[in-house]
Image 1 (cartoon, rainbow, N blue to C red):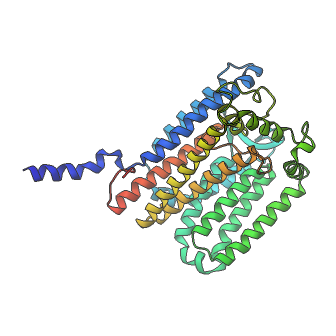
Image 2 (image 1 turned 90 degrees about the vertical axis):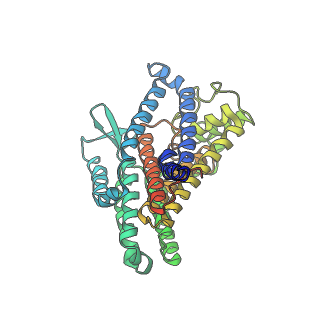
Image 3 (image 1 turned 45 degrees about the horizontal axis):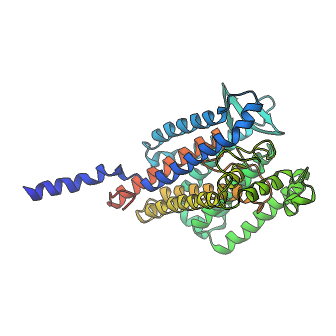
Length: 392
């Protein structure tokens, strides 16, 4: 009887321990979100006060976006990945259509010279955010359906690049150069992981880099940003203002920061302080220790997503593996660019820090992406027969 009881407990154990969901991923994402909410509250109070809102206006909006994202993510978590694979082309079509529709007169909403949003009732939707998810799902499906062609024939590589070129072209018409770069880099990274021949990949990678560089230099404001990045102190009160103020923030923070809520740069010295330049406020208030902690958390998050992708690949779940890799690449690239911009390592570009910066659309899509990765972990462990919790 004791053996029968032990066998029954062992068989039920996988269902009692997290149901296969990755607790490490949930934990590190939760820490980043928690830190982000605290820093958004700290950095946005002066802006909210100036605009006539309550002091925690942006904090409550970010929290609402998070709760909505978690709610939608919980629903996505129940959807089999095979369903997303089946509708991958439809998702791509809807994403491309939204990018095209937003450019129609009277449809898109212009903010700071860019037409990136359209209004659905009281909600503003940034069209490029859903497209990021749609392209990852589509490329993941494409790599599974045309794996042999991708690895052996030129046409297998050029098809997704053609789709990517259309999307990038629509993004540049908004203009949204940052989103185009992120989607381009993510897709090329997924194709590389799909075992595109190295020579072919390198050649097209150089072509893509040349095109993006040319586009950056042809637009006067982009060329100005590039020149400012090289020497921000040559014009610290005009074109180099954002970067110099960000560097001052890091300098003031030193090792341990000036203390939470004590930032001076957020008092209208540093523009876009709760969105694009939140990391600079982290450097000022929490110091080098705080910035290294955030970087370490992002590195762990990305490693964990790739680890889950490798589990899927070993279990023969190739669509799930590519989906996880694509999401890891996108989050990693966005975090790298945002942190690089804040620290003066990259030209100024309007990208938020995933999970941390203020941005309802970004938060919502990232929550959905992480829910998909959790679903990958669950299905991979079920397929491999391991059934053990993520922390094993």
